[in-house]
Length: 373
Image (cartoon, rainbow, N blue to C red):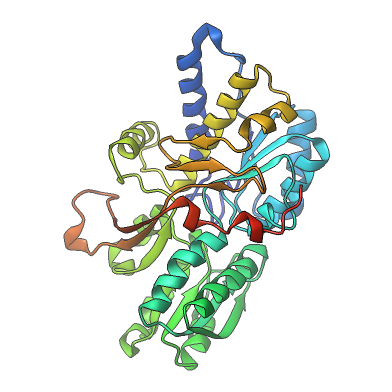
């Protein structure tokens, strides 16, 4: 079952297109195993949590109990994701989170049935926060959405910035979701930082960047660092709005032949290039089905056994490993820079990958996670 934001600020990041990505995984599994497939009648249901934790909680219960879902996938919005993790634990059913960033899923609130795919706030801060600070951005103001994701981003980025010899001089909370950021940007700019870091995502990020570009702060030498960005955000505003922005990407559709081949299939189905959330949902569904095949059953405890410690190499996970200690799925990630308009050779080709961050460096060490299953 797919549980995510079908119509709000995160719909382009994942939304309905993730259902297509999951269906692609099912089709590939059935084609690969044919009559040998352990499960042949596979259905994807989907529900909209509207970015509300209480709705996510109710929907997760319905999906597990009433609809008999064996696994819930995606669930962006960290507060919603943590609610679903609690249900997975209580119901002893699988949950593979792709869309949320909170490290709590593999930290204090980890559990046996929850796996965290794709990315998290530690990984984003470790890439972007570290690099921008080391490049001379020592004094920061952070603007963040006031819920679990934003709070966790501030914590992770502050750690990375301070480790790089910088300081977070101030933090400014904004409502979530929100469309008017002008007063928050003005307040951040008044402190005369070298860098304003935005910890927003999806539709909120698009609005904030638009308003930062109109604020004149760029001309005053105050840079904007983006904590979390998806290809859909760049596509929505255009590369001009983000040109030169450095950010950390979990996967890029035009990274290499393997990525591009899958992205071409996805585009045929949807008319869009995939974000890393779409690719992550495909990979998570694939690895779940491979575990069912290997175990010869869809029993949740047996699937967990199959997944724990598994090394994975697929179109999404490079040097991937599903850590047994905290269920963090680690893999290579990428430091990216948004191209200028003259460097874009085809639609959606907006990123220049400037560095690969190896899997073992990209994510918080398991020993520091505070997870105990």
